[in-house]
Length: 208
Image (cartoon, rainbow, N blue to C red; front, side):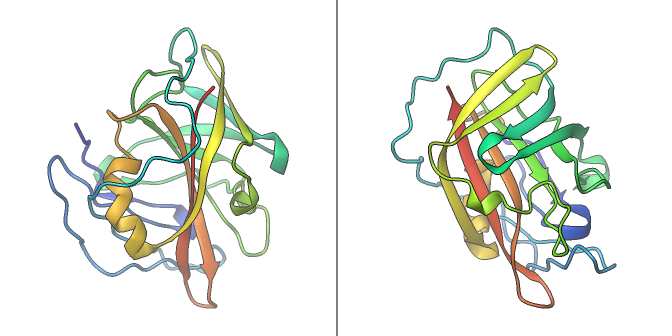
């Protein structure tokens, strides 16, 4: 099952997703704007299959029970961001206005679940101060820790990719599938060209 997500909005550094039960079509051109500029922006996604990250175990050991995330930590980058649950009210999934915090799609999987993508979105801010400013620098094999209301869930990064809006469009349905393989997906904007962000950093990690 793929939940309807009309728009995935990163606030001041936004990107967007169009997904619905069954095949999904491109809804319009990608438009992603700078965190320091005022216009809101969106990008569109479509459904397709994507390759599984190489070199990652397919038999993860999960936490005793799922729980809503409270803090996402990437020790190798010095990231420790508090998490707010976000929903798709009005078809728009908007992360916290505080760029130092990240947003977890509450209608998706919870950390510790045996299936589904745990989707966490965070800001990139050109001037600095965004929770995921340096996300593209994380290396495969790095550990990501998620503190939840039920305890601690650890993940190991299996893939770090910079995808154009079109590339992300072709892979969105599987990447963000709340009923697929258990994994953590971290997303932010990338490749500022002076007027817009052209790409997204997508980090996929699986439970240890």
